[in-house]
Length: 254
Image 1: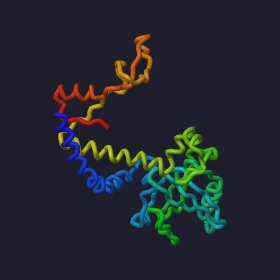
Image 2: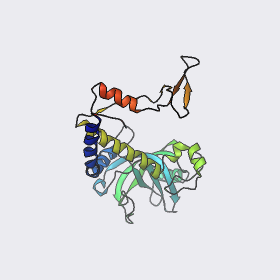
Image 3: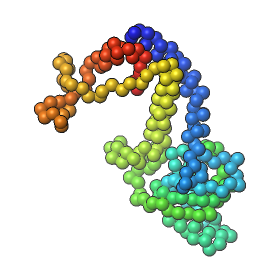
Image 4: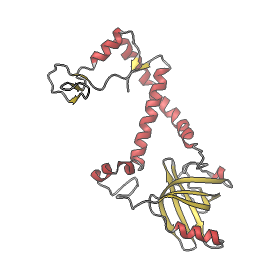
């Protein structure tokens, strides 16, 4: 039984890499369509095909700059970054207020912006949304923010101890975020691939009754049973043997 399972899993793994490559773009496309009651598109979704559309975006302020005759704000969410422009020249009273409000935005402010998608005159080839920008027609600050303790960028100035302390900020950075998304994509593919072949996903206990082994146990006191302890499994093959004898010849655990 063990040999059959190992052989089937080995054959399945040989097909996993091309499956991952074929499914990558499909998963990306599906994950970028995130219309909600608060937004019509994600910050990584807009392309030239959206020129002329009225859109609403929500996200964090990556950077905000005043260019005197206009200001622009890069709005970021987990899907990407979109440039939003606040014109000053030729703007009406409401437009001037939006322009002034945009100059008060700080890093990591959470904002909601509505406006029209237009084609950019100076395109940014390094950004998927770099061919378009949004001309703001409304601006709402959903939440202000203190200055972050480190830059929310791919290459940051934050030390590891600081990044661990503010882990929720660190996860906003692309290297950390993309590692989490990659793991999610791979585990989804593994589950789908093995599930199609009648494998059953079974989770075995993380903590069990302490067993007499040579190594020292990592023990956790039992609240319900004073004086007794749980331990990390030192003989995980026990679960494997139990499942095989129970007839679960095709199972996996991630």
